[in-house]
Image 1 (cartoon, rainbow over the protein chains, first blue to last red):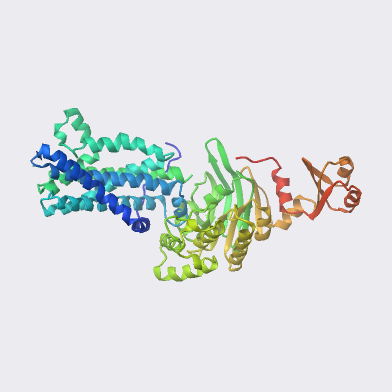
Image 2 (image 1 turned 30 degrees about the horizontal axis):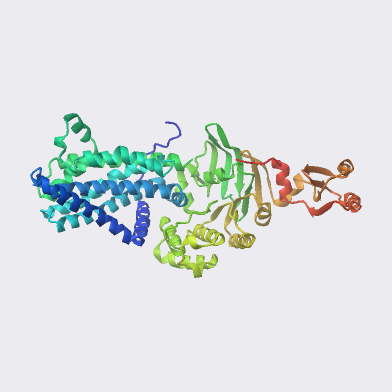
Length: 261
Length: 301
């Protein structure tokens, strides 16, 4: 496409100042943030884990509560990063003109978006720790290996931050994000193995679902929570990392197109 | 001395629309340099090009002898910017706004504290340091934005319509602050469509329209070059406009009549006897030059 600056982004230390800005704002609003982090997963685990779990008993050779908790950890990383990358990033990019102010300093869009993605990943860690705590209290966690979900959740946050920021760069307004939620986030939430093993899906659908990043995040978190060995860890990490890099690159190119005119 | 900004045949074309046609200018160090022009003249686009936030589609542009295309970050490190619309960070207090902005420049923490104290004093906001920015008046927000633009101790400060939307009191305070900055040796670049502002602040200015520079000079030079030195404004129905037109050059806008002349005496004598007319005799100003050069048609872009 013409008029696009496809130059590869450079990630510099300046991006950490953007991350720091966001964490300072988050600290001011810590009350509602914690309620959100703990409240929602607790509802899922109590409501579905115990309620539905009563009838299901075991799934894929583990208690349903463990199965569900390990899926919810991954899916919450997805929704946390998606919300942050859309509503919050868009607010700073367009109505609040925060990026406009930052762009008159030595920082570039490359730095701003790297900082935003790091922040999305960090927020995913916060929500991941909250679920891990709730799940542990409910007796769903079976191994210290569960702590390895923290870096996994960070990578999952990075992976979903890119596409969300791309939506922000393209969006004419907040309503636009409904498309992405309805067409991307919700289908992944339902199909990528959070609530049931994807092996129960028809084969065609399995191959589609296997390209989607949430599937790979769940494949990493589930055995870690259940205390089983992770199969093909490099494949899953590689898929998440690839989505992260491509997402970041396209987000930078599209945001340049929107702001550097 | 080398100019601080040097632009040669600078152009900015968008598909189907040219914002800046072909402008060349030098901005000397230590001056206040103005860009005047109606809405859509290309002023803001020119300023965005100075910051590397709008890549030019032709021509050359250097700041501090550095090419903007290859050194935008180094250049921005030495510039302070006051945008047309305040874009303070609403999530933070007055002091935090300055702290956060300082962090974008990687200014050492030890230095930040003393700079913030003196900038709050400069902006007369010391007692509001812990207020949220959306609790400040328009004038205070502007002063904070100016203070923020100074956090990196810039050599050059760029102000895009610094007093648009402010009440007269606030505007005079901002003017005093900008004069203070110039006395401290900062180079200022400002855009405006308030002629009074430009006349008070600018050592030199360019008048732009439709993406081109129409003329450049000191306010006095421009007035001398483009209009007669004295103006008599007449309000009311003229019964003898032909007679008046023989005494001076007249522009009619509705029921207002602007008479430009080198020798106002005959017209004033003539008007003495017409009691139904209200008139005002004043020296010509930049506004007359501006309207003369850019025309009186409305700009609704």
